[in-house]
Length: 139
Image 1 (cartoon, helix red, strand yellow):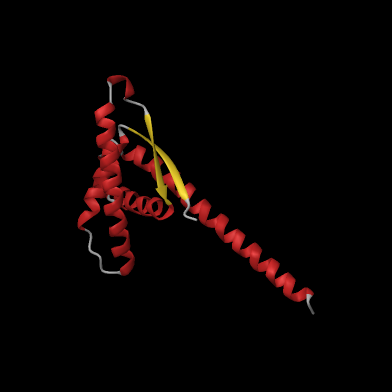
Image 2 (tube, rainbow, N blue to C red):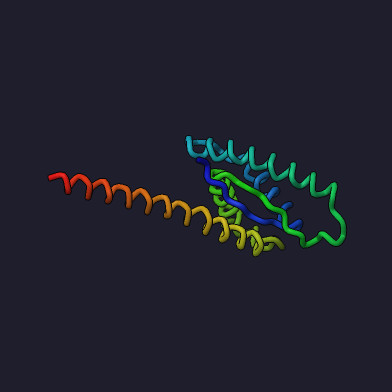
């Protein structure tokens, strides 16, 4: 089962997310982890660009603050969190008008990605404890 993480983005933040993904396009892929993240980045960029094109076809002045649902697989949400966090750590990006909104998105992603990881870790630990209890009760 692949975990899905849902986020909602409005029309203001979508271009900023796409810009972050495009900006990280030319990163060096010295390690396997960076190569995997770069591959996920390419998929995310396509997903966000296609959704943006569909939104632009349907947009009206009244839809300015409308939020759009994005359903990301766990690894996509993790990668997006990594890319936006990296972009926010660059000093000259702090003048970007979308800096605070991207910061909120990172916080939301962090909560959803890492809370899920802790839940999975707790379930694994519980299963191991149950297995250990089952083994000790046999003796």
